[in-house]
Length: 108
Image (cartoon, rainbow, N blue to C red):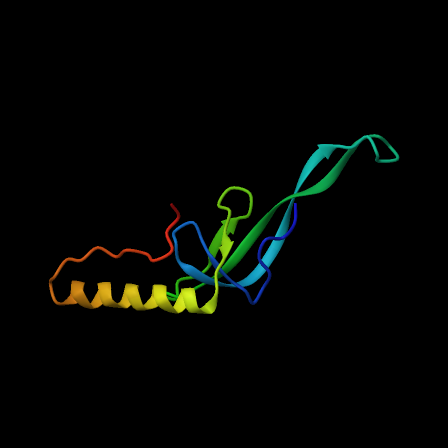
């Protein structure tokens, strides 16, 4: 499985936060290998553990599985627009006006 996000890139995690990736590590699973010289078990990279810091509230570590969460890369412009919508929602909540936060790039 290819690494979907590299350190330094921005991605959308499974909670729809724009996240700055600081680490992407392979997760190896033990599987039978017929190509292995001893025809036994071998370690294969099966998934990627992607970790980062939320650009909304600074929470960390934000960790996602490449296979199960399917994080997607987003541009800086998209991350800035999401941050603006989130801040407007927070200000409305502080004034006592309940306004649900609608993420501009939620998946359809």
